[in-house]
Image (cartoon, rainbow, N blue to C red):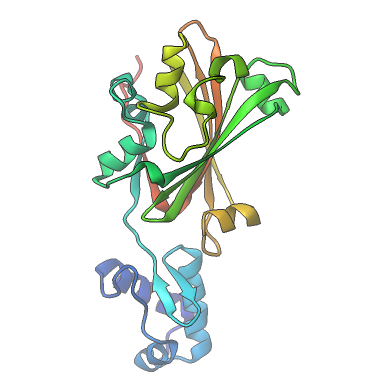
Length: 254
């Protein structure tokens, strides 16, 4: 009795998880899979589409069905923002890499800086009127030349003008990154609020992050204020969902 595409997808999924098909390698040709499991080619194609939607494989022209890397990078919670890290020169994305046991270089981050008008969300976060001038600093972060996420930060001009936060040179904005620079300006970050949700990517986001069909993104909004509540940064991040495991360790409140 022949199996259906869901059962075939389950068998192939198990093979990927066991390591029968290594990351970066390919599944057997569809004709070979059909013969091995006594199914027709259409059943194989449907099964492959299931695995593609799950983010396990990506069909690549002239190569076949490529098995995607499954090892996720830790995206730390509160620990990535520890003052001891950025005051000693370690920026947040690098803290994630080190916690995962992966190397990083300044070239892993590109920067684009522009002066623009605050949209309503940015204006509210920075306690400014809508349309007020702000600096927009957009980063594209890669690992092994594969994009992992984007992060766009917004700042009040008087807080960052004349600093490396408005310098588009690739890499973090100096030792400790933006938080260290704000501290030097007398605006030490003290409290962060993060909001995270998931959705499907826009076509531009899918192209920028090189996402396969069906992969969602994790959307991050981050608001940073000083001890006295003054907002110093608002950031929006778009993360490839399959590239990160979001990890939080915290003391349980009374």
